[in-house]
Length: 161
Image (cartoon, rainbow, N blue to C red):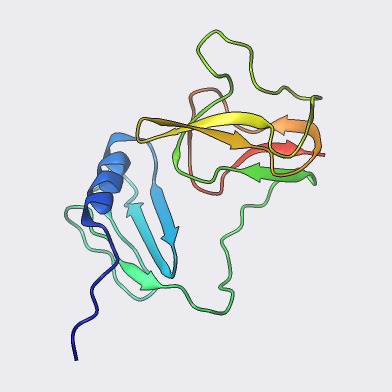
C-alpha cells in the first residue's frame, strides 16, 4: 500500500508560526476539511509550542500537529459572555478594525440596526483586509473589541440583541 500523503501545507504552518511569534496571540487554530491545525504559545515568554490532546508539548521551534476531526461533534471550547445577545465572532486570527480606513466613520456603533450580510468590521490577516459581515439581523448591543486589537478565531467581535 502507498503511504497517504499529508494535506498539510508546510508553508502555511511556517506563516502561522511566524504570525504567532510576531503578535501577542497565544493560540492559532485553523480547520480545513477533516484536518485541524493548532499552534499554542507556552506561557511566560517561552518558545512557542504545540499542544494536542494526544501529543505532549515540544519545546523548541514552533511545531504543528494535525489530527482528523472526529465525525461526531466534539465538545467546543466556549467563552462565556456576560451578555445574553447574539455574538458575531471572528472567522479568523488577525487584527480587527472598526472602520474602513484610519479616520473614517466606523462601520457600526452601539444602538445601530444591522442586517445579515452588512459589513460590521474588518479583520486583517496576513496583510489581507477581510470584511466581516453580520450573520444575523439585530441591534448592536456591544462592540467587544477595540480598533486595531488582535483577535483570535471565534472571539466575539460584536454582540447583537
